[in-house]
Length: 311
Image 1 (tube, rainbow, N blue to C red):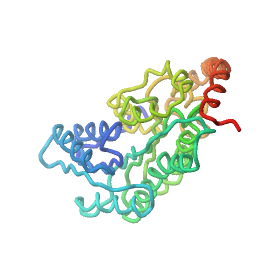
Image 2: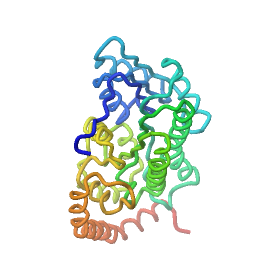
Image 3: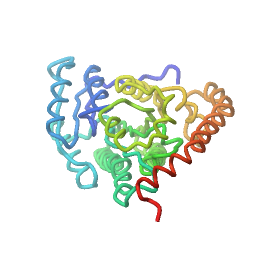
């Protein structure tokens, strides 16, 4: 492990769904800087055009192919069409790496969520990446090509708390998918990874704040988060080191070590030390969280009353 060759994207084709903004764009720029051919997919053409111009500023050589395509990814058909379009510029060959960064969150109190909020949470948090993984694995296997697939979950893929009833289940489902594919794709020589970033201050984060409950903001107050550039580098480093579960900072890494199940660890000795420390850290986190909620009960009741929730 210590002397294994690290993955190098130079000259490879990297496909990034959700690459027009946030983590996806930061990762796309990083891959361009590493000499990769990069294709990004998202819905908004204006944002794609701006992202492509920014990516071209980091081109390392004129031979690099940088492309952007407008597609939805919420169904098997859409994800397959997007992948086929992306591969046309590469003689129809499957990408060497697929980093699925698409997704969105709409934090709210569970009792205020509609049926649409809950179903949309799974669509935008799980299916938008799952369909991409499905299309990519099928293409790689049919063409008998090895490669890498990385999904993006969240710290909320390990734990959850108030406000994320439509988001955390999707991110934890992605963990289940990634863990399954990590095993199954060994049959084909395809490496599967999943990244668990903490809070990232992106356009999506600004949108989240429009519906996020105050108590959720209070719980997250100590989470300094990562910039998208920091998160992209953490994800890339984890992929380079062939980590099944990738984290970007210490608290998420603590939850990884104490909840990883049968997934391969990153370093058996350090992981065990972190796991032991979690016997203290996790109960403290739980007590602080529960204390905040208990103190919030009266104001929450008043909030619901002001909304006319009670019959």
